[in-house]
Length: 284
Image (cartoon, rainbow, N blue to C red; front, side):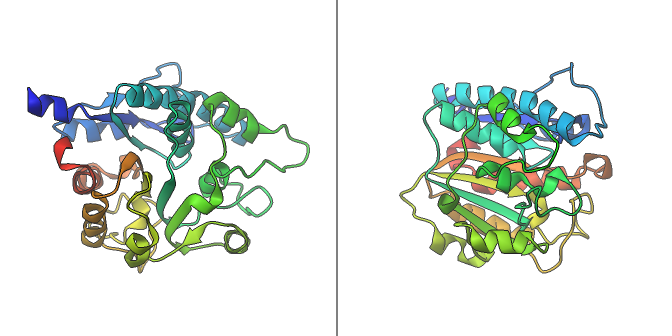
């Protein structure tokens, strides 16, 4: 009975969506694990392709609003939320749930090969996947002749902007023009992977988010998105995660791989293995 109670201390949440679009293949990760995963089924949202950016944000507001609710309930039950989702915008749902439960983290570690700090004024591609960290800290929607879809999404999720100076971004080795300048002008701290531990206070509560593309592992895991050379290996990230076990973690989230390019589940299994290095020993 003691072992079962310890295992229940982690609320594992799997969100099979990418920018509001259905990605049921992500649920294969739950079948690989010995732990139970709570899958956000949401059958009313079945589209695999949504073209309009405003429609995507409206859909993400509903999906990640549900995620925020699950996170809040998990925290109220004394469990730490862990999520796997198709994109980094899911962090708004995780943070919203933490805030609603009165458990907003003192620091956030964002592990990503990219900055995710584009706004509508800097993006050249209009790709929402380049904006999650900017959305998280409260950057607004400045598109002309368009309603403020960003604020509407935040309201649907129930999340408030997170203070920039509490974000530690590593390693963001691939930045676009405009994004690089915006980060330099922000209060966000950037560092290399090998500098992370020195930049964190072990007394501060910590939310860890990692995009799997932070890894330089194209040959081992071709399903990872947007490969960028010269990043940390799985072994290096595992070592960091083992060290982070000593920190007061309040939440962990993962932005996943291309599930349709992972038929042998190599990326899914590698992600689960890394999470095993990060989670407290009582969660295994």
